[in-house]
Image (cartoon, rainbow, N blue to C red):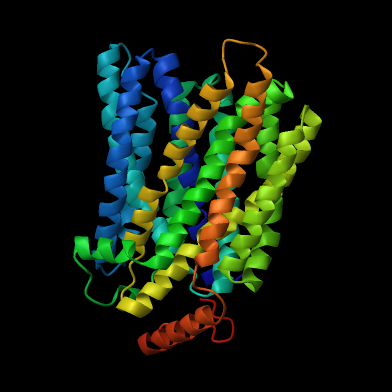
Length: 454
């Protein structure tokens, strides 16, 4: 393995801590503060709501600052190195409020640590994500690197969701926080070390904040990619949130079997990533995305018919095989929008584009909440009942099959209007290659002219 490809491997490893830290935070923070520490649920909910607004502003400002940064070490890597240790420290603090504090004092601790954790998470992970189009410049390289990144992400997600119940019973919540923080620090620093920035990507005079945001939002291909991302993530969050209800009441299985079924989804996705990566290397991102959304929508249909653990397991495995395709294309569409923007403006603005994407994609969570509210209220779901009425069972089937499939329909429509494909994409790649030649990037030191590998 050449040194450049080894560096790219370590760069991709940043997906593991990004998933490990954030998914464990998102999954267990409310449970820890409400059920374990007995802080009033309404107060915790208010803190998390304020955190959502803070998070949106973070993404935009950090992305903008990153694009404007000029240092001898690059635009993104300084933030990754400087922010990694504060990030893992604030993460560990989330799970270790001082003993003996009253509920109000613990709530203040939660407010402070959540805001600090989110700031440093955005500072590190947004810059890490914004490096993707730069680390892997050629389409085939991006498809290969996306598969590696998503493999690490799956490992981090499984650990974040499955490991905490096993850990807090043995080493406590504070011990779990320290263990995850240590693992996160190691992988984040290795990722920052492995990332390589290209000097020519930081040329040109950056735009002021409002023109930068306005120019990105008025970019038609970007708007269509945003709609695609929101629709796909709506399908993800709706399916994952509804699945525990579906497994309990429709399939009639316990918590252990539910965890096993969810794990089966990710295992199947892990196994399928390499195959989807090969398809993405041969096809353009639009075609790959269209095939993936159609396949995912079709794979959801068995959930509407399953009635026991075995049938649910078959459905889960099929969904996992197609989920891998969606995970790959989520990494591939936005970099091409940024490439096209460089041709139009002469600037590389990954920070702004990834920042806006991070803000808008959170709409999927709000849409998922609306879907749950409507289905539960209209079908008579009652958590106090051990056996739900038939209408409620149909509603749960709808949430794990019909609602995510609707997201795929919206994604397919957006992709149908997405213009960067076919001859238009070929022309864009030719123009971009000419820009690279002028900036002496492709033929610079350390580049293999035949393969394009660094």
